[in-house]
Image (cartoon, rainbow, N blue to C red; front, side, top):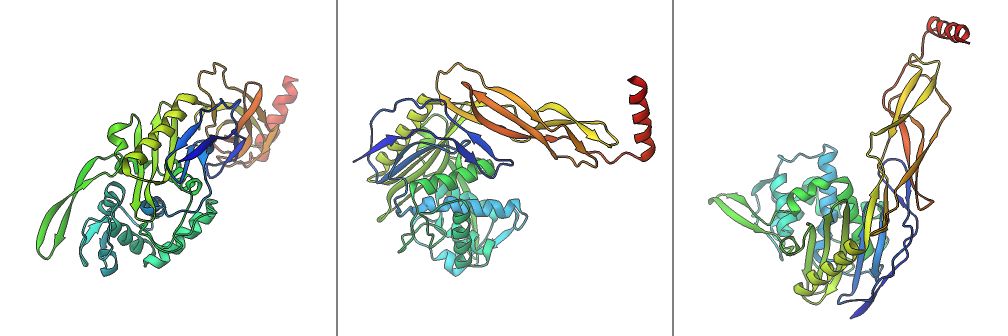
Length: 392
């Protein structure tokens, strides 16, 4: 049994969501003394990336099938990039079919769609489906694992080394509670469509082999979907080395949370400890949001443009994590460029909107032009100058 401590929340920078934005909490509430029955644990609010609770966050441990969050991320990125499609047919290799542990008993030569293999991986934690997808995306599991490690490095997952695409125990296959939260956050923010599968309790696929077609049932490995209000996924895992692990996601109102548990002694404890972390987060904090992306805030003067003014809008919504019950309002001020010179493309930065809470800056977002304009002809510029001269 180890202690888990609350850490004070510092200003963090959100990466990968357009312009850089800073987030802060006004004052961290005092946290109770947590005792978590696990080797490592962490609670994160993903919009801001702020860590609310942590226990041995950087200890390198075997993650079991929680590994598949990175596999899921790379598959979703391949779909988003157009490298593969949901309806593509994947032929299962001998290697993929040979995976032990959790599986859906794919046979070598069997074909399944990308969609059904993702469903098997996310819902039933199927090792064979995970490896089949890895081979389809990168040509081989080894190449895919190299991609996993490159992506982990890009996300700042400094405690992670992947050795396979499914999470079976392997020497040196390790990650940490913090790194798991980082990759969970990435897929949650960039590919929320994963919840289409991670929230399914039961489903099925059709095996089509030389012996004919047969239905195979899928059951979700995440009990929190049935027992925890607001649970949305994300991934469980267990092996002899890793013990019982989970990266659990949940959403209530405008706030989402990620709770990571590594090395818990049994499945009941794993789910209970994750729920305890989530309960603390939802009871203690709330998220205050700035205007939605695309909200028009002002207009900017255009020098020598066919249009004299262009509307400017918020590029990215800002979030601020605050102590629950704080009644103060999020305030904003606009810092706008004096002019932009034509031609101006749509989406050109024209200033920033700065958000304040309790008198402190808690975030900012670019203001960008909602449309563009070409440079005005010489005749139009002369008429405009003449009109201004007459008016004055």
